[in-house]
Length: 329
Ligand SMILES: N[C@@H](CCC(=O)N[C@@H](CS)C(=O)NCC(=O)O)C(=O)O
Image (cartoon, rainbow, N blue to C red):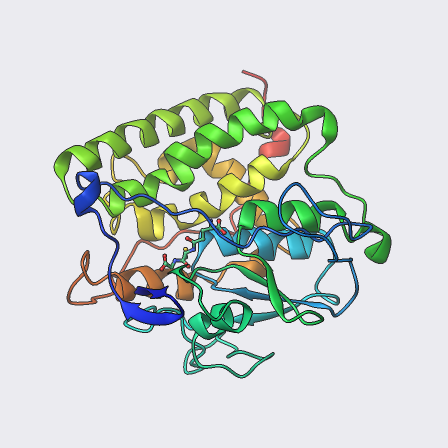
């Protein structure tokens, strides 16, 4: 685990000393958008048109943020148009690597590099910051379009519709305010909340994260007892953003990140809902539980210094979800 400083790799764990033991996620720096007409998006510069074969997506199967982009690539029929390279699950002193000695790790099929940090310095030789996945790479201008998953999924949601003919909309204009409100709470207390609990280096930083996390899971459980999806009858990006945390919960966050007041399977509605999303066409193939379990336990040596991979409970994600047979509360 480390970061680039002026284009040079330094092996360094997150600094929590300056923040009272709290983990603070830094903002992504590449913020351009692929848009239907190539015009500039809400941030960054323009010129990124939705062409088949032009973009390459770098992901980790372990990473919940990268996972969002893989799901949208499936939902929006983009797999023939956007190729993917998958990093190795172990993220050690050199950060994410393109080693291939693990099933599912593809290597860098575009550039043949050894490390993800080399993708960043290809785009910006003097880059300073963390080297994170996902990375959306543009093969035409040889740069990174975006390394921010919440924005990549919105590009995938609509920019390529004319190319694919798939107009399914997970971010409908009329629902955006409501989606944003739900996203905000879920991002802060659930998606990032598990990391804040897991990476805390003081009791108070842990307590501050784990309480709101389970308050939010209780809130979601109640909400999903009344309605099928987070915003009602229609599935939206808010559901997919929540799903990538839920799918990792019992196998990783519960034990490794000490998020153990309850398991996902202890919340009947959340658990049925998570299974429904897992059963959604194309989604199960984006879930690589072996990479998920291996990555966290093997890579975070400050949390698990002996790198022992736990046995973990067997969780049957294939059990029918029965969300369509729910009786109204
Ligand atoms: N804001 C980014 C965050 C991505 C992120 O933090 N990815 C993690 C993997 S789960 C990573 O690559 N971390 C490496 C590091 O922080 O050095 C997004 O949502 O795309």
